[in-house]
Length: 259
Image (cartoon, rainbow, N blue to C red; front, side, top):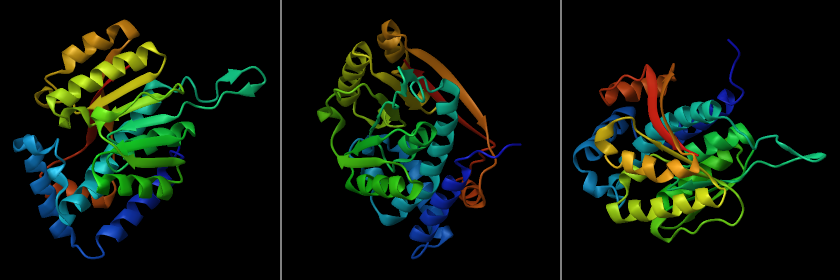
């Protein structure tokens, strides 16, 4: 089987993150923090809009070492599956550069970076959590992606003038109802103005009860919904954390809504 050309970059990034976070935490400590983080996502979702799920170094390490890499792997597969109409497209004698990526609620930057590695595009991430912004900047540097991250609220986000790919990966389910409704309005407008929209969320309907309404809202712009099941062979660190979390990722799953 031919090796994915981004595997080396992913392996270096994961190894660097492991050295960074396990310098003063043990795997057992990260595993306990991961279980606490999972409990927050399952049972205390009211804490998510305020960013309180990432309070504490252990939970931040768990997110960076587990959820970030998992998001990278599944979004990389989604980028391949949805295709890159702008990458390498020609406009006259010179190839047209890929659309920049706007990563809404970028978290650790993993999703935007995965897409950028596939296209060579610049990624511009933003997140309300200051730790996430710093982590995203580190992710871009470590993966060799041209990108910047800034602190901003989803409610205050303005559409870029330049045609872009607007990526909202694993963030819409964490927003308050008011912020989620406001984001939908802006995404519909963005699609009307020619931006490409890609929303990525967990496949479980329990965390996306609003999905059908979003499908209907983006349908006039060509929005299409799809489910993904990606077979995977996780690195040893992720297998260990998978076991600590009481999970088993033989495949990664997600759903997308894209124009």
